[in-house]
Image (cartoon, rainbow over all chains, first blue to last red; front, side, top):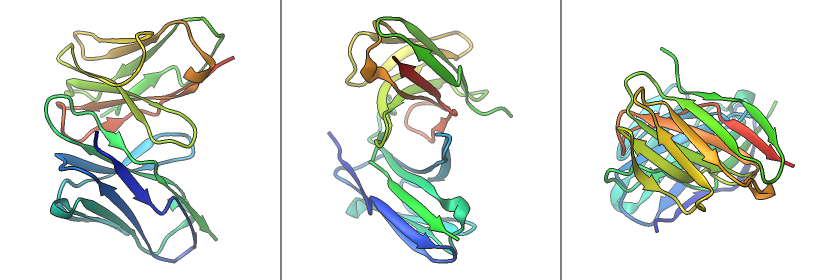
Length: 110
Length: 112
């Protein structure tokens, strides 16, 4: 089955720094989503981005489907950005099940 | 509009017992999927239901079952609980399979 690899696994930043999180996937995908999991476990939708570039405030994401990777950019990081960031892909068809990477754990220090 | 709601939020069960977890999707969404997330890992797909029919099943034993009701809400049932079933169970809803999914806050199940 499709493999989803996220890097780095852990990231420690000083408040105000920028960061780039990467997601590689091993096959063509129909859907790609980025999530932020808060300390209480809820997955917060960041981007639905099967291809192209999107921006939302300090966050932006780019997916290059032909090269099978996606990047999540966080600028001017804040302590509230801390948590685990997941990339998840869906190969399409009627099932629509998401396959998640293992996540990047981000810690932003004040 | 309400998001995806799951109940209960926390649950403690004894080995061998049965548990039922519930999920109400976003209004208008017809697809519900269930995921299991153990500590330190990404969520793993268990089931997907669309229009009350099972459309996908992950690699989980037959002790796990689910169903979707006419109002599109869903239940996940787990029989003969094992210690290894302790996890965060997440429900996701989408308008249909293969489009953007939205997750509930999860049910944290502890088996003792």
